[in-house]
Length: 106
Image 1 (cartoon, rainbow, N blue to C red):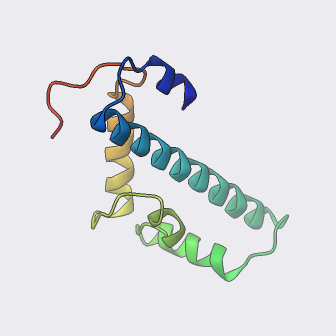
Image 2: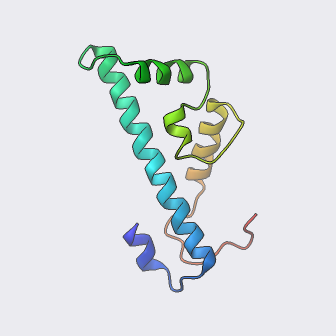
């Protein structure tokens, strides 16, 4: 995040929103990686399967966004698979490190 902040030549309202969204996405990624790692450990028998982990696995199986992920993500009614495909597409075509605003914001 500091790298992105250092590349911004001016800090106005749009840059603040950009930074806030980057921070939110980073928190979401950390939560997803952490919870999936816990599920993997539970499946191997190295971690006790809790009700929270079971709910997480059930939500993933049912193609729903788990509650622990939803608190860090943008509100959506899309199923999990569609949201992850959209996120992957957005990340692959993103311009991370961009220091100027895009032509269109919406």
